[in-house]
Amino acid sequence: MEATNKTKALLGGEWIIKESNPHETFIPEEFNEEQTMVMDMCHQFLEAEILPIVDRIDKMEPGLVASLMQKAGEQGLLSTSFPEEYGGLGKDFITSTIVNEGMGGGYSFSVAVAAHTGIGSLPILYFGTEEQKQKYIPKLASGEWKGAYGLTEPNSGSDALGAKTTAKLSEDGKHYLLNGQKCWITNGGFADVFTVFAKIDGDKFTGFIIERGTEGFTQGPEEHKMGIKGSSTVQLYFQDCKVPVENVLGEIGKGHIIAFNILNIGRLKLCAATLGGAKKATDTSVQYAKTREQFKLPIAKFGAIRHKMAEMAIRLWVCESALYRSAKWIDDKEHELAASGKSFAEALLGAAEEYAIECAMLKVYGSEVLDFVVDEGVQIHGGNGFSDEYVISKAYRDSRINRIYEGTNEINRLLTVDMVLKRAMKGKLDLMGPAMSVQKELMSIPDFGSEEEGTYAKELKAIANFKKAILMVAGAAVQKLMMQLDKEQEILMNIADMAIEVFHAESALLRVMKLASLRGDAAVATQNDIMRTYIYDAADRINKAGKDALNSFADGDELRMMHIGLKRFTKVEPFNSKEARRRISDRLVVDNGYKI
Image (cartoon, rainbow, N blue to C red; front, side):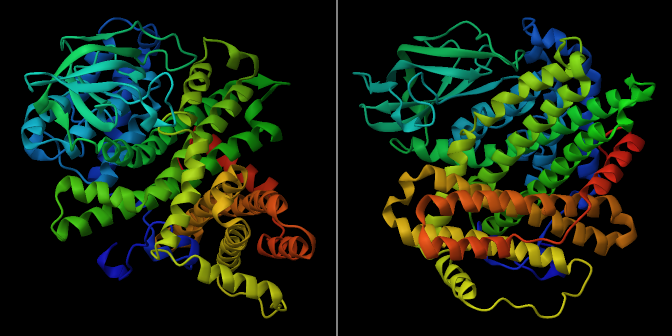
């Protein structure tokens, strides 16, 4: 955090039991000059090199995406966070997140870049030996070589450790012989370097670096996909594939550490990319609504369309608030760990692991925001939205995959609650103490004291009560179900939905409060409309998820008491969200897109 704040970053998940504090957040309005220039550079690259030829990209013109990636590499867009000693720019985590967002509006090309700079390169950067890093990272950083990642198999998707690909040491001890296959490999058709996982002797799950052209390594034809058609996706086949022993990545039998740690970072970066894509789709939809006339009026003037455009902006702004709040936490933790003597890789991986809960929530929220935005975008376009002639149809098809990869949204919801409970059991997060306090509060007479004071007092109280709702439901579920809770996936997903809503609502409130302190209350009128509309709607969503959970395991007087408590904790002041949305949509029309 900034030195003037004197505020220590929260531990991952700790926000659930802490009071909201605007000083502990970081907002996009605080980007420095260089970070703003980086975002502009990403947008300029897409406008100049990608968007004019998206149809050619989708037709998989041979060599096109690979050549465009090399152009991006020449401009430094593939190596933002790679250390300078390996040919990178050595920028901080926030700047690398900005690049992921900035490049997110490039349709299929964005997928190729994200796969290359993330799972295609980071395993070697973080877990490779010095020799491996010196050999591969400079070429991956420049775009001369492209990276890919082979984890998924036909019968092991979410159950990654159930992979069947095997590795056996050759008789001369110089190679591992890999046998098996991988599927859904992004960039697989043109990548030069692959991180692949296999089980040595059938049980030691291990990472390997495999180069294109290795004996016994072949690939299948390009998959025909519903969306991201310009992204190369193939199967990989290994038949006594000879991988030199020096190409083992990390420790033998510790491949799961590589796979799961890379996913933490990948989930946050995926949120950034979906945010960039959603902003692009919103701009497209607003501009269409301004020019499309029905009944002699632009459809942007009709209330139903104004509602849709405003809701797009609301979810974008809220997503952005939570994303950069979390990115700053990771950045701060990385610097703290580096200062304590941790290596570059240990510091970033440790920071991402600390905030793995938030990364999982961001992945879910960002991918679902993009799905919402493109769906409503098609609706705004009407029949034209169903035509290939309009780019919104491409955005719609491309969006759907984001809820599946980097761990399905269902898996990430389950992980969110699982990680919180595990931290509580280990004593890292005091969850049951606050949960018991909430239970005592339910038994007491409600406080109908004086009205809260301050510009954002009502919103702060709402967020505090939303957190009590989570603690009440989660605490009761743990007490009632105990060791059986992990088998009640529906309840876990209900609790995860409550947590995701509260985290994002709080992030939006903190951003408004901080922005108001920097610019003054008069300068945040639109942002206030966004934040208050979101909190007003989130109350009902939190209430519904909480009721569904409670109804699943409680009954009788206990259930009635907790329903009363849930109603108390999700009660918000009446609010004219229609007029707020109209003001938000007016801002979009004036700005010709999302520029809030």
